[in-house]
Length: 639
Image (cartoon, rainbow, N blue to C red; front, top):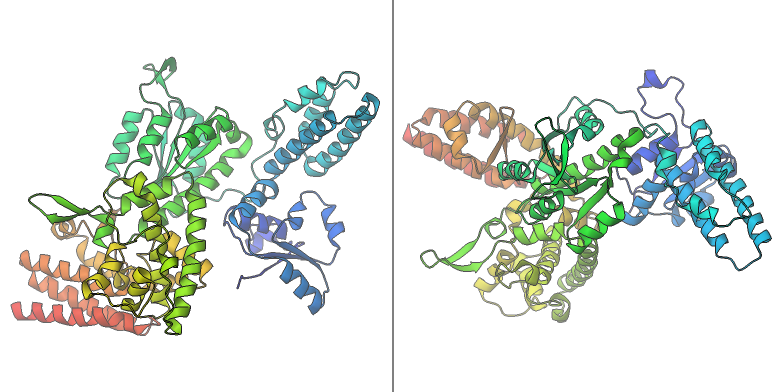
């Protein structure tokens, strides 16, 4: 059930500075929730004034948006129930609509002028006399000016600009309406300051990911780079595709570059850095197309002075998922809004990087015969990269989630009731999910989508406590009573790159976490948050003992990442802690540092013993405790 958020429209602390509040009103807070936090939960505004009285104030239209309710205080229980039943969580399109139209003054002004021009076009197309048409034009001008004053009464420059535009209108010459229609929205919003919702606060913490810019005129990015710095987001700048590719290759293992931002066209520069009319051999669009085909995770952004529609059409034709922004939108404080979007994309892709399955079939190519190098099956990661980079990513995800929910509910019912009903028609819609992948990514993309669907169903049923073998039978045959060989039963999760013992919850894809949480109502994020606390302690202890032992650190490079002299272990479940410890012990023994190994193991054993009181599900620690005891015995025998 969706969480409901109460917001007092008139919230205004007596001493905002003393209370350290970032917001001067409830509406500002809601704008922040929608735009920055991307919050989708339903919101009810409250006020002792009526809705009409509140909406007479400037910039209050967000109260009327989809997913928002309004209650005049005091209210009774019946009124509350009516409002709650009428609103619900926003879907992605509704959220974006509200962000664009209600969450920023700049966007509100843009949208208002766009609607105004649309009304002029409607009147121009009416089949009525010229005199009647001119009356409608004048009425529309008067109405829009009132709306504009309500929105930007504090910015006389905009009102002056509007009057200059209207002065070109001659009621005796309908063609002059076309002059007004041709005026760009940016002609108004350039007079506005940065988004009023929040001032930029300098962050004391650095993001673990960074941005790569490809631009032949880096000086045009100064406002963006300053906001990135204030937010603690690192960046690199390349002025040519060649240099940008070197930066991407250097980032291949760590994948810290989570957002790639490129100009569309690149020109050569002279020794002083001044652009020349000669174009570079590789353009920004060539680079983005190249990035989309690399086995890595990053958002792709085109930032150009060219038409937004031209850019969107260009990348749509190439079928890659590229976000498009105009450099003219960076003027007048637009850099902050742009960086807000970049921060959202960076956080999103950083989570993708850190939420990867550990199954070998996900990351490595499998071989039948090493000498003949006969391929049994390609790894699934390149297919997943292709999936995320597709310009139809959101549509495909929506289809997968809807179908996966249907299949999961049907199979859950069948398993719950030991039903003999055959569900094979449900689980083999697009082919067999155990099919080996041959590396023909575009041709095999439908098969991979089926694997994504069945992974979600498998994890849901596992988390609901059903037997692993029964789930495999249901997925493969649509019948848990079917006869299947032991090897085939084990093959099902293997071919789906599923390792339930180590993947829950951190080895699940971000899309799988979303599906389990929002479609199937499983609190997967709560589980992850609890486990995250234990891992921060474990990593801290391991870091303390190993950061000065460069030999061991080097040999454990597949398990760790280093940043600012800090070592982070890529452990994904409580039961996998022992895997890293086992490797540490083996390496320390080979380095003839038995006493260090014993000290390390005793330290970790003591730590996990303390964790027993902190971890809600203590069974998660059992395997690690048994392994630690075993490792400790091994060390003791050698000393």
